[in-house]
Length: 89
Image: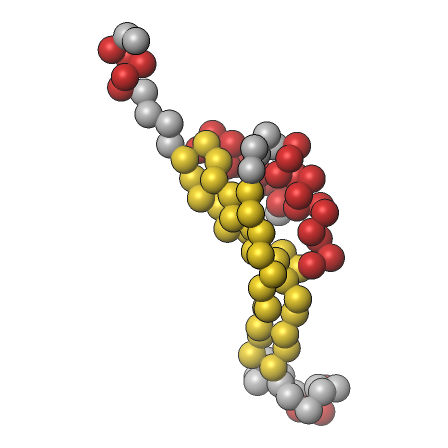
């Protein structure tokens, strides 16, 4: 191994990608097509405190809104990060 190879470091980025359940397959496809070798995802309950909204326009008794969500955890080489972020947006 040459000295230049020893000095070259692989920089890994951690991406946390929140998504609503309806976009599960789209996010998986983006990750796979972007060359991600492995990732994890877990069910998460999204929460929004909408106490500032007008009570007359609120159809529910509570001003708290919960959403079935997913949280993807992905470790990728730094150079892959911009492409994945652009596709997710």
